[in-house]
Every structure is written in C-alpha cells, then in structure tokens.
Length: 256
Image (cartoon, rainbow, N blue to C red; front, side, top):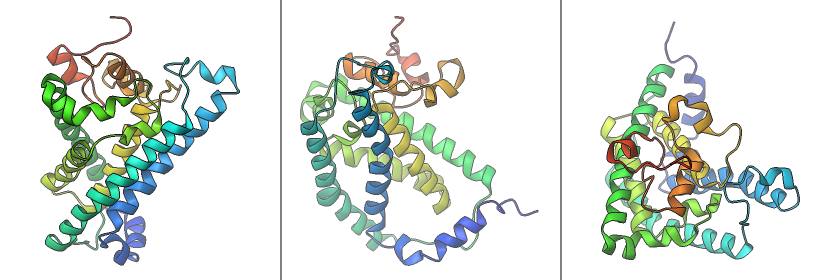
C-alpha cells in the first residue's frame, strides 16, 4: 500500500490551485490569514471573559484585560510588517528561487517526523536569538524591546514586534524547512503548526486542552511558560520546549 495514500488526495487538490501556491502573494496571504484565524478564538475568549467570571480563572493574568487600543496597535504593526518587509522578500525569493511542486505527496510518517524536526530546530534557533537579544542591552533596546511593550500577553501580541525580529523569526522558519529539503506540503504543515503554537504561547490563557498539558514531564512550556517570560524577562527564552532553558539555567516556573 502506498505510504502517502492519506495525503495524496489533499496534495492533488492543492496542485489544482498551483498558480496560487506559486504566486509571490501566497506566503503573505497564507501567513496573515492563518495567523488572524488562530488569533480570533482567543480574542472571543477575551470578550467573553469580561462578562463571564468562571472563564477568567483560566487567564494567566486575570487582573488584566485587552483594550481596543492594543488590538488596533498590534494589528497595525502586523499589517505594516507584512506589507513593507515580508512581501518584498517573498517577491525576491519567488524571483530567484521558483517553487517546484512535485506530483507525489510525502508519506504521513515522513511528514510528521520532518515537522517535528523542523520544530526542534526552530526552537533552538529562536532560543539562541532570544537569549542573545536579552543578554546584550543594545540588541534588546534597539530590536527586541518592542515585543515587550505588553507585560500581559494576548493573542495579537504574538506578532507585535519590530521588523528585525519579524524577519529573523521568519528567516528561521523558512531556512529550517529549506535546510532539511522537506516537501512543500510538509513546509505548509510546519508553518501552520508553528503559527498556532506561537499564538497559543501568547494567548494569555492556561486552558485545559493547552499543548503543554498534552506533553508529559514538563518538556513543553506553552502559554504559562511564555507569560512568565513577559513578567520576568530573565527567564524562559525558548518559545516551545523547555530543554534549552533547563540546560542554560534560565527555566522559571511558578513553583521556583
């Protein structure tokens, strides 16, 4: 039995829309639409939590609330970064590196394994970048400080960052899949998961179905891990997993 039988129908469907997939507009449309779609449920939670007290017990900082001013500010910066910086770079990549779409889909085990490796590699790259930008005052002051405008995290603060940070993290994500030579479908799956986990990290809620509750032994930090970073910026630099913070002595939990 063909190992890619589960993914081939999906990939065949996507190939029928290859002009869109290979368009220089696609990375921007994909990134923005996926990001805002993942943010929307958490924004609805923010609205509901204002009127429904039981929901607020899941908020990591229940005394805080999301203002419309912060929503507008975060949205404006996200749209600005995509239009002014990300789109020109995707246009350049489209011109210099034409997209090749193979006819066959990858097998499901191969896709899952490569997405996991991409996530591990991205986690290491982000940890290194993040640690450096906190330990070097000039880097923090000139580049990373924008992201720490809000000490209380919410979904839309995920991409509240300057151009350098936005482009750096985007480069890590793109170069990871390029370095491993993954299938375009695997790359899309990795980007989807990466965007979701990043939004969940910043959502401001510790929900019963949160990713860190599904991963055993405290190997994954999640929203609580990253929210503590925004409160105590000397700790918890890794975006997802906790092993690098453990190794470098920068892991902080509420029990510490």
